[in-house]
Length: 129
Image (tube, rainbow, N blue to C red):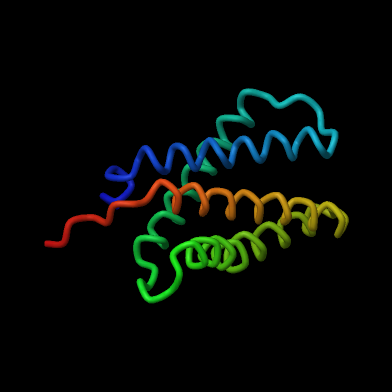
């Protein structure tokens, strides 16, 4: 996990970009005021998603177009982890399919924006032993 330390600046900026997307999304859907606790949890979750995405981008095959690989990695992580866990959790809580779709759309946009930020800033792979 040394790559997180090496790329902390890029991951932090991707986290901020994801938080900005979440804030705008929150305003757009007309939700109430955000609490400090919610922002802290969102920042931690956004940082972790950006860190995992950074690891995926570092490991991405070099033969593919880097921007396509970055966006594709964000979509794959979203489809593989975010969609099943979030959809199941929201449906267990009896949320409508519209709420599920809106929340999934929010997280897809966050992952794609984070991928673009990480790609744009560049990532440094960890040193090889």
